[in-house]
Amino acid sequence: MWSGEKSIGLSKLCILLFIIALIIVVVSAPWLTHWFVGFSQNDLGGTESFFMATIYLGSIPAAYLLYNLLTLIRRIETGEVFIAANVERLRRISWSCFLGAGLALVSTFYYIPWLFVFVAAAFMGLIVRVVKNVVAQAVELKNEADYTI
Amino acid sequence: MPIVVNLDVMMAKRKMSSGELAEKIDISQANLSILKTGKAKAIRFSTLEAICKALDCQPGDILEYREQD
Image: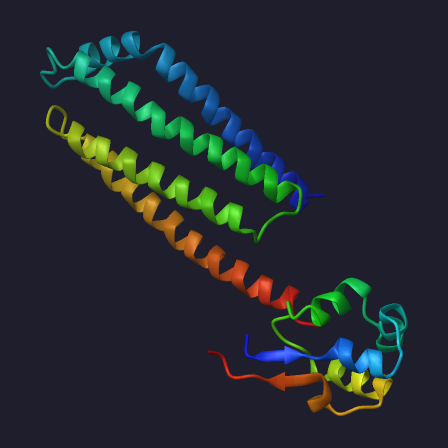
């Protein structure tokens, strides 16, 4: 039988899989970029270092995002949902997305398809930001309800 | 907040302890403490009614409006 507990477990598993994927991408970045530049039909000669710079720099907000996401899901697991600390985590997640989007935008100067990553990351950041605003309102409502005697 | 809760004054007048009042109006002592210390953001009519009944007083004896500076 599917339950809320199992759903949180699945979310945690997905986050851990993303963390593993991020580690693999960072460790294998030199080979990965070399393979991609060779595989691509576009002339990407001399852009390997740029790709690696994007991957390494992008891994910082990505790691920060995943860390905050893991902390958030752990809090939700313990029943701490509508608290100010979670609003802060969501704010950090949102800014991590925007930071990644900014990096992708800058990277379009050597590889135009980074534009898709920029749009996706910026859109995700926007959605998380709206969710953060909703949770912030919910925290206020909960505080009011808790202090209604 | 310009609304002041004078519950402790009324309890002293009626010589009623917090534990006794909490039991009579069926709320926890922690919630009664929130009410007494003015930390409460709102009070239900049902709670107010129970307090007035237990302390034999009017809502105005418990709640007071004071102009803020």
